Amino acid sequence: MIGLVLAAGAGRRLRPYTDTLPKALVPVDGETTVLDLTLKNFAEIGLTEVAIVVGYRKEAVYDRKEALEAKYGLKLTLVDNDKAEEWNNAYSLWCAREVLKRGVILANGDTVHPVSVEKTLLAARGDGKKIILALDTVKSLADEEMKVITAEGKGVQRITKLMDPATATGEYIGVTLIEAEAAEELADALKATFERDPDLYYEDGYQELVNRGFTVDVEPIGDVKWVEIDNHDDLAKGREIACQY
Picture (cartoon, helix red, strand yellow):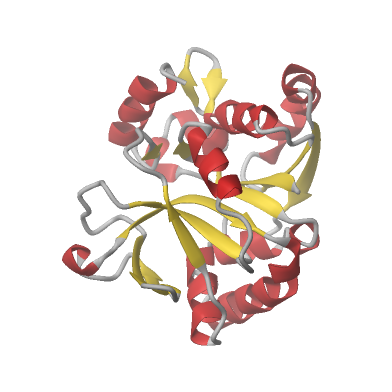
């Protein structure tokens, strides 16, 4: 199993930081970036290889590749997304379809979170589970969050931002454990998703799997501090949290 980071997005709501950097390289604690924190988490749980999907301002990641490898003791492979500024991240994850065949822990490149999340997912492996989503069942939800409805013993029933927050079981935080045996089915669902609409999210690919009868499991992460950084308010919160990790 290896790490996988989606870091191709432009993050336009974080300008001027993202005028020259992808969102994953915006500093959140001194010179430490979200990508740094994620790589640190991966190294702490014993992973030795990480693939990073890059697109917008990808040269900034290429420039830092050797330094990041040396700092975290990881072998990094960069996967180019040729449509990063045109299409949404269902296509971005599909670009890593060969990587998925090795089994991955996937982390969005804009999620500041503690290593306990990865540890929770690893501890939940087994019993035939092929895809396990990290779920926050504590946080109060609003319209912007990626919300999830689950059913006892059946995993995810619905995953979308477009639902009444009061009906949701919790929020998907942008970290998933994907076993190797799920790779081909997931890649096919992602392809169907972006071919239907290139603006769709990879979480819509998860929904496509569910609609096909595939069980997507979840694991609650407990009461932990994390944030998805989409705008400057999120960045301020991320900086408050990052210094604790």
